[in-house]
Length: 358
Image (cartoon, rainbow, N blue to C red; front, side, top):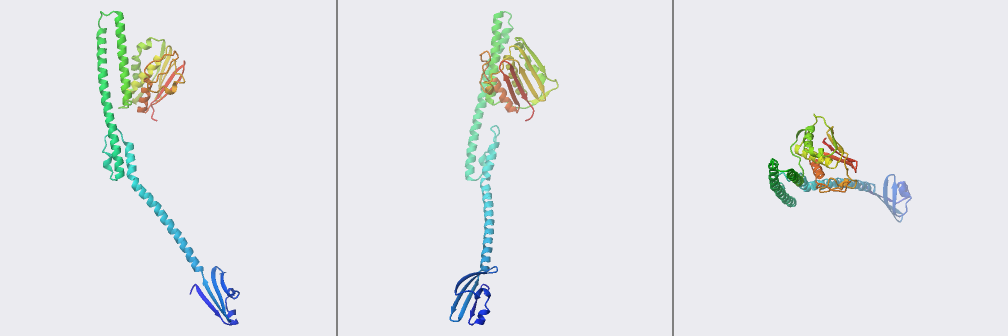
């Protein structure tokens, strides 16, 4: 055959005709290499007759080598297909979970959407979607109760304060009141204003700030209007007021938010400056309020924007409710404004509001 062949040798002439690699072999089993061929050879003698059986294993080894290469190739292809199928199946199984995660990320308590469970049919994902739906509903109910409470509280607290203020205004028109009574009446009016401001601050914090509709606001006109409400406070102290704002400067912001922020910052500057100067400047969408007042201690600086945190001034006294700067920070975060505060005790404070887009 192609791989197996043999020789029978009965005399010296036939022996001389054998291939050279066979003539030197003694009886037994031999492994020989002839060129690039591997041969397994069996030699036996019976009297004067010699038998040579040759098996060429090269074709077999080549077949084995080809089989191994084919097997490796097929294994690599199957492995690649297996990995691809695994990723495809994993994506198929997790696609709904990924979609659910994206929908949950976009959920907003103020927006009403179709229940998440209505969008999925896989049993495990459906159970997870129902759990999120239940949680979202509980959050919405909590927010509804909070909004109802704040609305009721706003009405119930402001109504008596309005009545007190009205009575004070009517009594102030009575010429029969002596100077002492009028001073007490002024004290009542100031207390009403303080309570109204406190209620507004607490309600604003409860609602999480404000970032409603925006409109073009002339910066200088807005600041002049706010400074006008502090005329008496400024007149009671030897404070020089310096305003450097171009009359054409305009900001596209929410009016109520800007009013509340500037009111709190101006009020703090006046309250903690016994004498010296308060400067207000505006340039390139940056508003700067700087005073030469008591300043803030270094230990208090990391906490000035915390709710109800009240630092100790250089006189050792504490004032306010600790809500002013907390409200300012809350509004700035809601509106996307950036606020920076630098202060040094006994040398003054500098607050910068940056209204430019981040």
